[in-house]
Length: 277
Image (cartoon, rainbow, N blue to C red; front, side, top):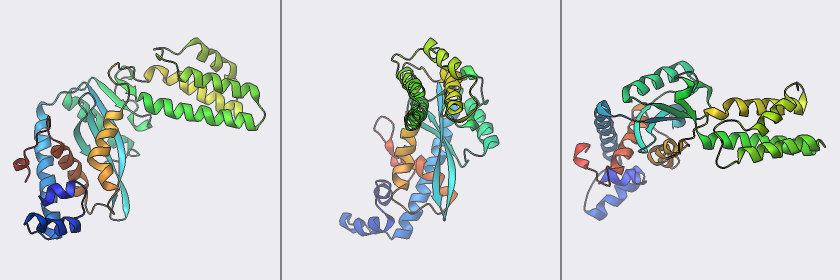
């Protein structure tokens, strides 16, 4: 019961105070040990089930974990179609070589047909471009924000033509349904600024070329073109809890917590606690 109450959001001290209401006893240190043990069991149980796992789309995203006064990076691997955790590794996205090596390893282990990620450079070149798709939401948000900022700058600098160009780009980004190939309107905008090399015109040139270059890399999956499944798993199994605490005390606890949280969510609403406690 102490494990369940802690995973529902209570602190170790709050669980210790609440247990007598259920005619139970348990000190906060023993509850902490029980949570850690259950987390390690859940991790072992989860990894054992990976041997026969097969996924269509592998979602990957990184996040930070506060621990002992420092922020460590962890990488989440998720089955996008089922919104299910596959595995977690203590790797920062800035460690490009390790990220690429491990993503390739997981892709092969689960037989993934496609890699889904944001635009972080560490994910480039792991698989062929036809098998790597960018999250539509991440891509649209970042390009839209940059276009809007440049539009505002053009207005401040008294450049109505450039502001109009950014309005056109924003309209192109909002097209629904989104064309599979870069539309002619985008190509004309790119051509208009292709020779610019200074100031505002150069910033617009870089943005337009990047939009055109990455247009066909953005996911057009009819089921879900985003990487939201990965973000939901990170939030539900890790971030929501980590925001209510000062930090984890060890790497083992950082990794075990999401596995235990994922296990407690159950399969079709059923969770057998005897497998981990």
